[in-house]
Amino acid sequence: MNITATLFGQMITFVIFVWFIKAYLWEPLTQAMEDRTNKISEGLASAELGEKRIEEANIEYNKIVEEAKQKASDVISMAQQQSGLMIDDAKSTSKKEADKIISLSNQQITQDVNIAKDQLRNDISRIAVECAEKIIKAEINEEIHKAIFDDALKELK
Image (cartoon, rainbow, N blue to C red; front, side, top):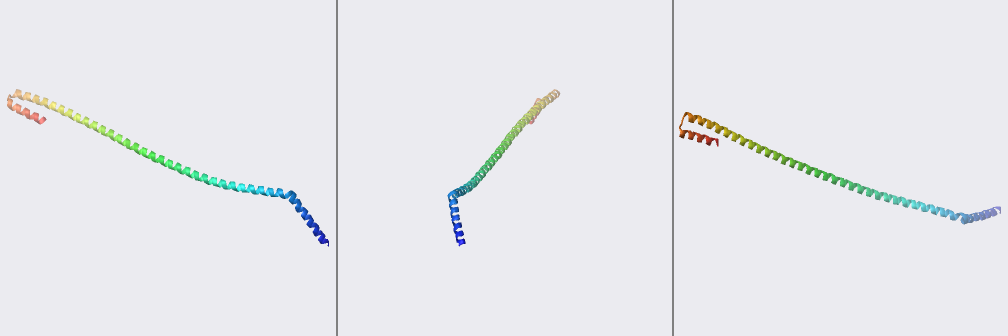
């Protein structure tokens, strides 16, 4: 019978122990576990939100980088076009200047040739007149001399 009384005593002690825990400790323990569960849930939600924000930031970053690459490509393309236009303009200007210099040189050459021709005509005319004077002094035959002189003038022209 001792075992039954001991067993009965342990059961009463256990019930008192359970009642004591339920009355004084159960509520704070469940509250602490619930708070811990809420903190863990909030932490997981924050982590998921953080991951989502990181993904959005990566997408935005990639978009900005792509736009920057496109703008850089556009700027380079525009610079190449402008340099091509500048080169074409410089070529055109230099061609015009070269043509102008060639034209002026040709005009100068033509003018120098005409001056030389005029000088040569004057010299030939002077020589012809001197020769004619000598011929006339030596021999006076007007018709022959006039024909010779006219032929010489025709040849000069």
